[in-house]
Length: 335
Image: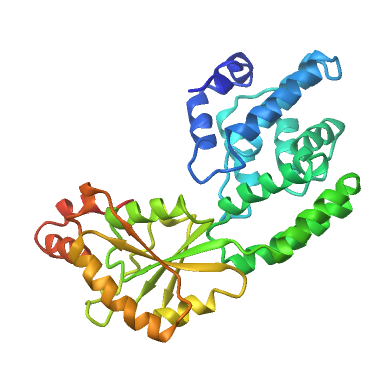
């Protein structure tokens, strides 16, 4: 557990919160890129400054701190009830305290950024400084992190929703309208680099995950596309319904892969990602590439080899193992 959580243990205990490690684990979840410990640390530092300057008293300071630690303790970009669930977890972990209800209300107020008390307004102002006070460069950094958190959405859907929200922010925070408009103008023309990692993924295994994680270091986003391979038997199960893929975009497609790639090029620069286990895979992929180039002359493609420890893993081998011992084959499938 980091110093960020250890330094305020006494305040946690005053509210009856003893499962501090549980709170910390939530903030350290891998799908968080903006709503993480860095964001929390900035909030805590701002609240510390309020206390040091005498702008809040001791009781208000503790309320703001507890609200900070719990306002995004539950954060799942695929859901729209994070604030309610965060407030519920706070009530679940905390004992009776005179200001428990006020902390809960502050947490709930962050959903629409509409304060129901003066202290809630203070907290929301701090929480929204990234929008109200940031330079264009800082807004751009914020935008990239938010985009990473919403990888599960198709980019066209994400872009439309994001532009709508930013226009609302211009009305709500006119003091930073110029920089917010610059961000909107940037998004209007920005074409992210998106990789399409396509395969039959029948099933999706640790070797596939290794390739995926490498590709994510290269591109702004990776879309995992499961197609139908006429040479492979389909189990009929959704092999992409895995916890590890929950915050990533997954789709099914049929027909030519090149047609699917083209369908994603309206708003992004798209590259096809192909994984390799060994030289035999490369021979096969190069042969397939010639056909795909006949269908799509401007096709961009990248080949990524898996790490040596995954070279022996294949979907067909896993299916054969599963017929004999399902428990053994599970070790090759991510959660």
